[in-house]
Image (tube, rainbow, N blue to C red; front, side):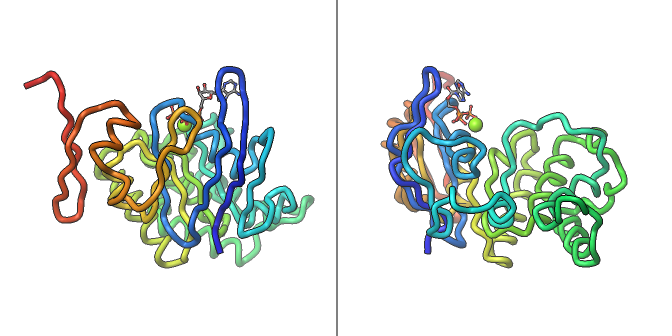
Length: 259
Ligand SMILES: Nc1ncnc2c1ncn2[C@@H]1O[C@H](COP(=O)(O)OP(=O)(O)OP(=O)(O)O)[C@@H](O)[C@H]1O
Ligand SMILES: [Mg+2]
């Protein structure tokens, strides 16, 4: 079973077009979507998570047309961490994470059950956000906020987690912490993780599968080893660079003007 399959999806907005995108994203694996700024990566995630609809084509989630899912049912399968940090109302970290439970609540009752409390507790433990639970979201640092947002997505207990640039704003240590956390939940809970990343080295190291987007088209896909080549960097990013592997970690050495 595939986690996601898109069949010839097309979306036109003003000067941008996502054209005839057909791809499959494996179940239970870590997939990253890479490509230049403005190439359509966030648009693709938004289509998969039903935040925007396409002009043409279909998206299948767990082999079922995504249009056929009811809203709450869909939110129990896919959670999405958007790219921009929208201004959130004055919420404590625990209140924010509790929002992850809303797909499981009846419309008129958002009281947390014992099970909800346990799941929220577990999400805070995994992301190390317990210590901030009574603080207001805006008072946390960028890195702490990012972990709280991930905790909210985890509390949603979905099978598929979409993350748009989860490591932006984080220093290298916190980037690695987030990537290791995602690897852990992928292995421990067999969660399908699909994320947009700009750091190609990290994307290649942490992913099982990669998809490259340029100007609204999928221009390459496959295992990181297959994808990450000198030719790929020239085609997708128009840069000259060589790639070395050190203990399985890819190192991109660009040719620049600076000697
Ligand atoms: N609602 C919209 N109206 C007009 N143009 C849009 C709209 N949404 C997206 N675009 C344009 O579509 C293109 C793709 O946007 P998208 O956000 O998917 O890029 P991206 O690959 O995620 O880029 P980045 O790496 O900078 O986040 C951009 O040029 C963007 O300006
Ligand atoms: Mg984006």
